[in-house]
Image (cartoon, rainbow, N blue to C red; front, side):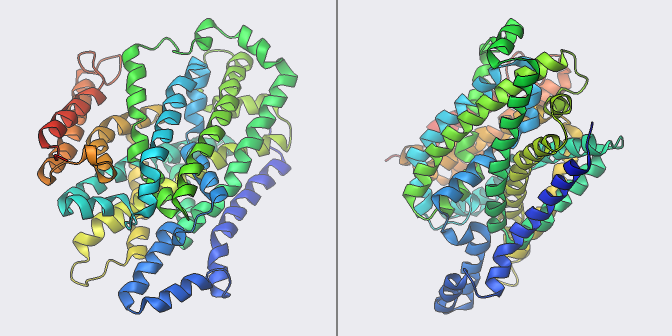
Length: 488
């Protein structure tokens, strides 16, 4: 690396900006500024329980007044956190990253916008497990909270930030220490003001994402040649939309994109939107921004392969290593800011969501029965701390971003999918006992198949008998749905 004083100053300024942005709403409240409306609402609530509910809504959903620009910024930046994983895949397999990590999510986000976003915005629940509680009961809510906490584990993003930090400072020690430091920093500034901190920092981070990747493409173009020349220079496999993958593997990633329907970040932002129109329209705008960013990252991956050559020892660092080659002082720091911003926006959001799910939705109802109060904010902060530690532990077991996505999605999505759809779409409604069976059966089917693949020690990955673990879990979930579907 050729990091100079200006590059280091940019990174330090970014860290300071995150803390200041996260604290700004707290300062305004203390000064009697923009949050006076919420204070008035608390006063009119009349009871202590009403005030607590409003404070929880403010901390967890920003008072449910999210504007269209803020909605788009927080959704775009949050959903695109796996930038080093995208770089790893794009460097190795080329343009097929668009088929696996782009197109399926555009499709399911559009369907989410049409069928779910408006209904979620109008529902009273502050979280997905809370909605499960009101529809399916306590046991299903708690089990779904466990699965959702795993689904939104910040582990892949803690890993990416840890690797990037090691690369920047030249640290050769265990990834454990840099990962713990990064998770701790995120916890500090997000826990202070909750969802408001996530949204305010996301708006800055979205700008940095696009500027940084625009800069590296321009510089790589000047150094090596136009995107057309790069397209012609890379191997044929890098230009193949399928990347040489089997139909089964491609379909698995399409099914994993069903993750969109059960992802709490989509539910949280829909619930936080000021109106149903903001939620629906914002998602379609976000799809356009994602498509543009996918274009930027796809060609950055092709430039990385062309300039760095094949056989990188750590392909997950393809984007940073390309930056080291083509960017000078100042621009290098700006690109690292873009990578950090892309990852941190998702880390912040998922750490907050997993903390809310683990602390408020799962632990609080079990451990706080005697007081009669859930203390939502305190429990969410405790859950965030636990989630950070569990995320670090998980990444030590699966030290690959793409593998973490694949394993988490394959195990958790099949069990959650149909019960979550049933909350808002009558066709998918199930009788209560069958909902619990679907949660357990769908998840258990995928997990069992995954473990069988690992125990078989197959060189092809975690598949068993040539079948990816997502399929058995989904088959079990569909069978249980057909048996337990509520007649309409």
